[in-house]
Amino acid sequence: LSDLSPTFGRSPSELSRIVSYLVGDLKDRYAEILKWDVDRLTPQLLKQFCGAIHDAGSPLLSVFGFIDGTDRRISRPTHHQRKYYSGRKRQHCLKYQGVVSPDGIIIHLAGPFLGPDHDLSIFRKSGLNELLALHAFGPAHEPYQVYGDPAYLPGNGHLAGPWKLVHLSDAQQEFNSRNSAVRVSIEWAWEKPATLFAFLNYYRNLRVELSPVGLYYSIGILLTNAHTCLYGSQTGERFGLTPPTLEEYLKTE
Image 1 (tube, one colour):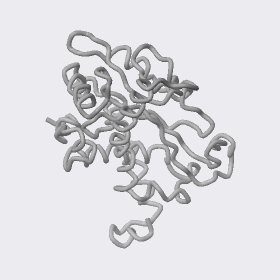
Image 2 (image 1 turned 90 degrees about the horizontal axis):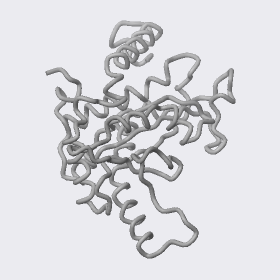
Image 3 (image 1 turned 180 degrees about the horizontal axis):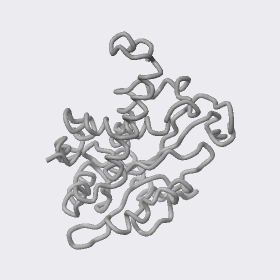
């Protein structure tokens, strides 16, 4: 912020307060869009997503998105270090859960969660299971699913995942391989926020005791989705889908 101080004629502390206010305001305004956009994610649109994923090579006809989690490293806090420490990653971090649709939009984001939380715990806390039970259906009320790691299973019938057995049949191996290949294309969407906003990677500046670090990544996702609306994405190109317009996504029409 010290580099921006001469440009805006404000002290670094003033700029910090402005940024904190802005990210808080954006989160309040668009929290429901980040959680689940009921108005846009209609049964007809979910059906279109299912068709695009199947046409791209998935053997499944009922999967409209892919669920995953991401760990965002932060600077080691002065206090409550265990609260943020992930033993698996061996770092202090905040965790998020999201669902990516084949048009390149992250249609669900939950978090931040604490470093020790594991995927299933985050899934249960996120409320996504309840959202899927309410909204993950097609035009004929056929149940749709999101695809993810076995850590998320079992769910309420709206979660699908790979076969995890000691000995897989040829058909099961092919099932896993085809879904894995499609999922790789979806995961491009998770790389985009840090590419657009390099600040999100500078973990030494992400100090939870000094600034609303937990909001930064959420707003990074919101702005990344906005960028996708304007300029498209690798994911959307791979699946042959166009994202919503910025006006449709932000509901400014």
